[in-house]
Every structure is written in structure tokens, then in C-alpha cells.
Image: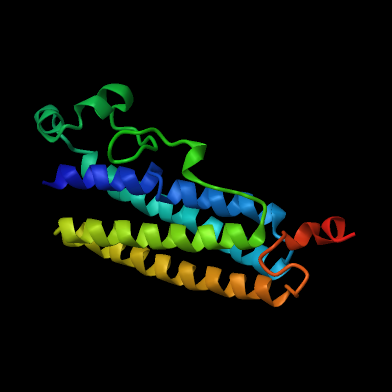
Length: 186
């Protein structure tokens, strides 16, 4: 059963709603963000997501470091093992390799922040699902912590969205990227 946890961990390492995608999403989006407070939020959370990747990676490493060849085959971990031995490599639980298509960076503050809020909710749901399936205390406790951080990130992105909305006026409310407003309203 503990080998199933490996697949869940890999999902949160390199899956579409995982920590690698989140870190790259937020750290990429900060460059097009026109407001310093929001840049700081994206930078802080993007950096924290990289630390979450370390937590997930440590969990997976601890689960597989003493795995036997028989356990590898029985768990269905053999295909991964043939390609990566016990090295950590970002992929989803279904074996789909990490790809930049797992994250968005549109360049529009409202679009990106709504995307970020949705991403945090999807990650929280994934952690909820893992907690429904995992019953190992040593795995559950860090997963609970990571789940709590997803909730906080959702709230922080809500704050950032409010900052962006506070800068909008009747000329650009949900119509154009405020960073390009001068060019579009001539």
C-alpha cells in the first residue's frame, strides 16, 4: 500500500496541479504584473511552492529508498524504475512527464490571478484526495501542512486580485489588461 503513496507524491511533484507547475506559474507571471504588491505575492508564493516541492520529494525519497525489486514490480512502479531507478523525476501519477503546458502565464493580471486561485483549489483538492487514501501518519502530517498552505495561497491570491481590481476604473474594468491601457485607450 505504501507504494501507492509514491504515485501520489509524484503527482504533487510533477503533475498538472503539483508544486513544480505552481512554482513555475507564479514565478513566470510576476514579470507581467503591473503592481509591486502583487509581484511580491507571486514571488513569495512561487518561492514557497519550490519548498513544497522539496517536502514532496523528501516524502517520495523516504518511501522508495529501501524498496525491493519485488515491491517495485508488485506496485506497478517498475516502468518508472526502468527509466529513473530511484531518482526523482517530475511526472503525474499516471506517468505523464512534466510539461510547461501544466501552467499558464497569460500576462493579464486578472486572468493570471483567477488562474492562480483555481490552481490552488485544484492542489487543495488533490491533497484532500491523497488524505482520503493515505493512512500513514508520517505521510499524512506533511500532506496536511501542504494542504493548509494551499488554502492560505488561495486567500493571498484573492488579496492580490482585490489590489488589481482597486486599480481598475470604468475605462478598463475586466476589459483590458491595465498594463496596456494607455495604448488601447488612445
